[in-house]
Length: 361
Image (cartoon, rainbow, N blue to C red; front, side):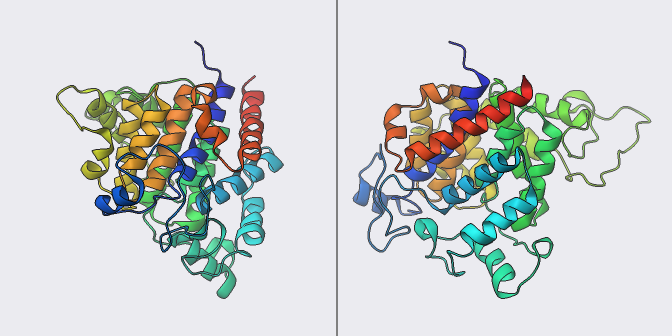
């Protein structure tokens, strides 16, 4: 059955929202025995946070602050028919920063992440302009909102890279975080186009580097062969230092398909790649699960969820990658029905998907 671009775009957005809401109740359990005691050994649906835990005043099916910010991003894209950084910043000032106070357990979703807290203090308490703020957080918070930009610019890698990098550096100024965030967006764009998350995906991304469509510094020739004699070292001005963030997805995909590499059950990918929040723990696990369960949204997102630790980021990013591969029609309806903002989120996903297809027709 053919999956249309529009269905893939909708699947990516709704998949991200589902992943966010699924992890709300069981977020950040680093002691898996405690997680199992509170929610059983296999979580299959939306859960209500326990008293004294993160998001404790929210309900099953609610979005966290990551989902709230993703909605702001999508609305900004829709209002401007693309990315407008000034409008996005204005929306954050008015719609988010008026609702938080710079402390962790506050604001929409019941918890404010490190990078957002830091930028709030710089913007509100220090009154700094947007071009002078940022944090050193090494997390996936930027991906959780810029995945909408990857969807919007799925067929325009230059705009994708520029908009995602600019938006990322509003809150996270580390170059490695920036490169990995852009790389995730580039992978998601490939899946929106109908490509597979397999061992060949990095070759396709490296062709975009060679064509100067993605801003990564690379000196090797095709297929990572040594540079040809006499070839010049290309200028790396304005480029990420290396293409490694584009190369890792293929290795995770190879591991997922290699019969001699077994991670069983698959949720233990969180133990292999790491349970903490840092982007270099999150992305390998997401790529692995999204390749292994490329046609099975439920298995992918539930294994991301049940791995504990920063399972919310893992579920959001896996949900988007697999949602793009299966399309919205192949996401189990119970996950969509369980979202407390179901109608609004479906409308946002539909409108964004239409912008994508209108530009490609």
